[in-house]
Length: 143
Image (cartoon, rainbow, N blue to C red):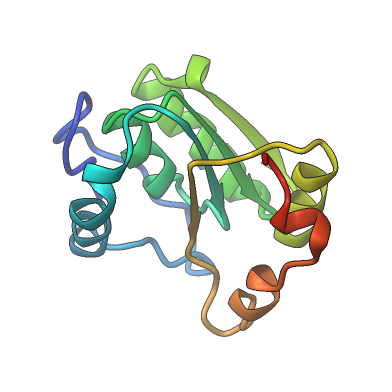
């Protein structure tokens, strides 16, 4: 795993130890950011189900000003922190050990808005559907 483009291009990322986390492949990251890259300059990101932090780190490398990383797994949180430290990005990030839905509700309650939200949840747990459900508080966050 590596950073595909931007200020940290080519730098390696550690994977979460074990088999419980499946990293987003470099090819998928490249495709995502080639599509959205022209639509942001700066801004705030949220990397839910962060795993190693690859999506949020890619966003920071390509110009996001700040990114919040959320994962409920202790090993994932330690891996995100390690990757951010290695790439000297800790000043541009906040890392939280929390459930994705609880994190979204907390962001809505604080009226925190994001320019990009990255979701790559575990396939077997089918968390994507519940993470995408929005209530009035969530949809109005940041407006």
